[in-house]
Image (cartoon, rainbow, N blue to C red; front, side, top):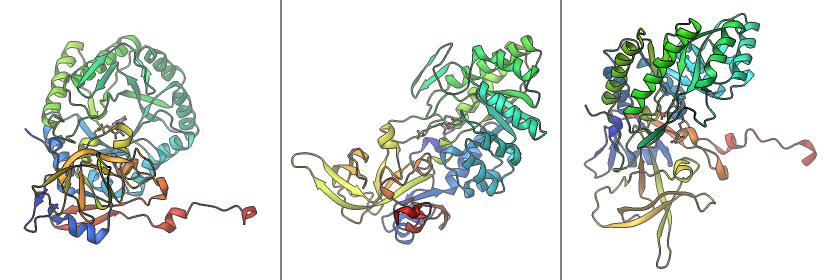
Length: 441
Ligand code: LLP
């Protein structure tokens, strides 16, 4: 069955009677007038359709637990939606911990991961009652144990492993060892477990965690990841007489940025994972553990679009036509960072037939600040509203104040209603943290 991550556009996208693009029952031109641009727009129905697909796809596997990888887009309103959808949260920084806690999220349904969690962050996680901490390395094992001990607490932990599966969007390689900054190499697991059993008695090891990549279009990698987990659980049982009851497979499911992308359905991924669990639990003689997944991009990516207003343009003699917009690499770092490509439309004239090849440039003082190169669009005029699809994941969350650009607002649309979920930053807020030392005055 097709799922919304396989769409380029939010599921409520239409062209209305005015000939404008509408999402969640809201005309994008009205939204541009009301909230200003650049503006991140999130379609609530698309987010909920995806979370429902995840729940439905795994409904025959009762031990399945879903968490949202909040790094893709973290704000208090999203925490509320995830809570209502019965999702937990995967958190990877003090800021994400703080946001979840501030939204009154049930912290027992969160998992904290990261390769260099600080003393402060780990203390915060313990104080907030985070459900599980995925421990990444030997340094952290010692640090976390000492913090837990001084707080008189026992902390449930997973060990983050590098399972030896490396994904490149369309193909993958499997190796014994992986050169990765994350997690324990499989050859280091025995030493870690011995330390936990013998010395780190304030840590309760319940399972293993891995994340094999992002924007994945392959099913087999998940099949193999489950197998590696079961193989290790069996080995740990035999070697250490320790029964692990949880595995966390990470996130990674891809979305459709352009027609070239062919992401898989959530139902297909669920089938692959549950089949692998069944086969490998028989193969290794292990009871089916609790299985966690923590998708980020596939939950919020398709739901989000960014709209900009067209400003200046430049025709290079015998060369490209550049059309500049009022945002750029500060609100979407992905094109300049990863050469990411997007599908673009003009919200006030999506269907015009006369077209041109144009390059959409940002407004930042940097030649690399290009949002979309050589795309075909109706002829753009100043004031047109340009819509970039699929910016919901890693758009706002990777935004910056480069050139002292203000962070854009984000709104949630549903059924003709729109609500602010992140206010547009003001110039006062921009300078709020600046300090002029007295001797400079
Ligand atoms: N779990 C862990 C431990 C992760 O490191 C990540 C993403 C996820 C889950 C969620 O993966 P997703 O379902 O979103 O693929 N900034 C990059 C993506 C970096 C992903 C990092 N880890 C981008 O914009 O493409």
